Length: 263
Image 1 (cartoon, rainbow, N blue to C red):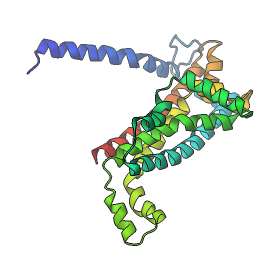
Image 2 (image 1 turned 180 degrees about the horizontal axis):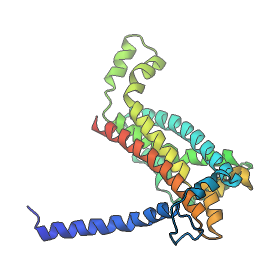
Image 3 (image 1 turned 30 degrees about the vertical axis):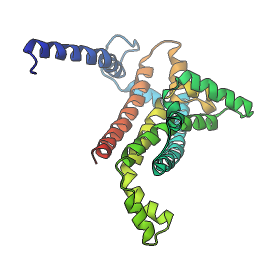
Image 4 (image 1 turned 120 degrees about the horizontal axis):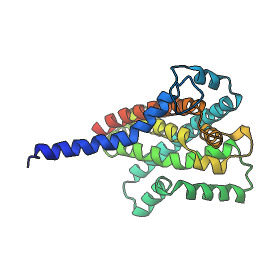
């Protein structure tokens, strides 16, 4: 059934309105990060001074370093564990809905609930809060995302080649390194990039599981502390940088994931 021109025009109009609602505020934020004046809402000329100001801000640099440490370490751990979990689940081939629920629960549980649960867990174990607790917390929810991406690739994986490799005398490690890993590597990288993006942007869980002081303050937490005193072009510049890093990592992840699904 063909759609009438009026129907097509109406759908396109709705699509334009939705995208405008989503992206015009982001475009305004990026534009105002280059605003020369101190007022964050009035354009007074193009300037890069707010980005230069960020480079000399010790609190922001410390938060950026903490965010990078948390994102890289949690991504590495979550990618390793998530990949192994995906392989283990798919090799079993028969699993119930209960296992599926346990694997993907961190993805669907509200952040505030997961944050309170993790804080209670760390308190019960008498853990001193700091970057290490933020990393552990990020691993918990990132692991599920990595597992889901890798499992999407393993759905079409031919396990007979693993059996053939074993029949030819290859060890389990050699089979994984020479047979399994090359096939699933794009999915592993895509899952890792997705985990990195989520870790960089995450605020609520980091806020609950961080220790006191600058030593465990991440960039989202730093932005929150700055924005309580009002929005400045410096905050716009910082938000633009964080958004650019996140979009880049997410775009790479989607490109790799598209290739995985198409295989």
